[in-house]
Amino acid sequence: MTKLPNIHQHFFASSAFDWCASTPTRDLREVIAIMEKYNHSYNLYLVPVSHDTDYEINWFQPQVEGTQWLGYFEVNKEEDKPVVKIQIGRYPLTFSYENSYESNWETCWVCVESVMYELDWDDTPESNYFSEINNKLKASIHDKEYMDELIAALASNPFTTEEK
Image (cartoon, rainbow, N blue to C red; front, side):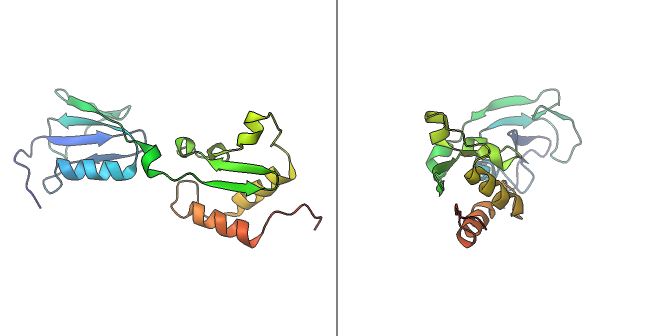
C-alpha cells in the first residue's frame, strides 16, 4: 500500500448515506473507489488533521478549522442500476432506486398505472398481497438480498384472485 506523505491531513468523502476517510494506508484513489461503490453522490474535503483525530461532523461535513471543500461528485445511478418491474395481478410495479434510501419498502415501488390513469392501488387485493409478501421478508430494502428474496417469495406464493 502507498504511504501518504502528510499524516497531519486526510481526505474525507461523505454523502447523506456513507462516508470514507483516507488513512496512511488508504489513499485518495481508494477513497474515491469506495465512494463510487456506494453509488451515492458525495462531497470531498481535505481535513487538516490526522485521520484518527476526533472531530465533529455536522451535516456530513467535517467541523475542523481550515478544512477545504474539494468538490461535489455526482454518481449517475441510471447507468448502473437495472430497472426492476414486476406484475402483481392487474398492476405493474417499478422499483424506484431514487427512493431506495427510504426506510419503508412501500416508497420504493411505483405503480405507474395508478399514477398515470389515476387507478386506486391502495387497498386492492394486489396491494394487500404485496404488503403481506414484503412484511414476511427477512431482508430490508437496504440489503443486497432484498430483490432476490422478494422474487423468490413472489414465485413460491403467486398472486391469485381465488379465495383461499
